[in-house]
Length: 396
Image 1 (cartoon, rainbow, N blue to C red):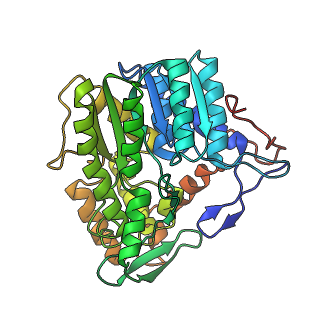
Image 2: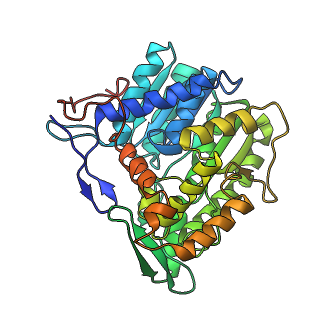
């Protein structure tokens, strides 16, 4: 079938298998160009199919020759219907890993569930024995709690009052004001339950209790802080409460891992175009301005560049790991530079529908959004018939 992007709001309903394959190959090529890092050799990535999770799996495998197990929850293809992009990404990753002689297996299912946790533990025990790095990169909007059976849904709301500010419809380029009503206590509690640190802690306890963590094992979860421009809807909103919980959980996990000389950290990463961030009011406008400035300064990074720098300059540099005053790794350091943020604040006041294409990088935002679904890559013939029935080789 010939596959074209079909948009509905902040989501693309189709994905392109060849484009997703090209996306993975491009990231692998970047990692190979940076040389081998003496990093972890047996890696579990929870949330491994897109974004920072996929970049972590690629960096581990092709940057450190690591064996990897990836856990994700993606839609498989059916006749005439494409899979979700993470499915095609994972299929391409496994194919490339096996060509390179690297172990790679994947589990497709709800990572919040006890069943998927047990399936993962069994696979590690059978194939790897233990793991020495666990990446936690889940980005689900809902969680069926494995103990209570309650389905929790996260919300994207400010806390304490209505939030009003500029945003942009990145499809049309129209800049307008948006208002978001404040969260109630249930909204906050549900968002923390979905996006906080409880599930991360459950994973690490299960792995440790089963003796599947090597001596000195590390675990990293990903977070975001952002600037004052977005903090009312992000860091000081419901998502921010969840991120606070995630970051506090890192210290609890670290205490639990002391007996095996293990460590747990939160890495604060930069703002990037993701399916989740595209749906957050204010964020697309902020990222459009951020991209313009960081590209001009020569410091722009995508997911793969961020994770390669995290591994090479932080986790596996052989030097003391620099942390901020709250014990976090800050790989958002270039985004949060004072000069970068000062320029964004000035442009924010000036931004209109008429001038955004000049003062911001809306074209770059749109390109990155299409890339998420396998569209817009050089070297892919999008007018040619594509086989939508691509399978992830290790998933039966």
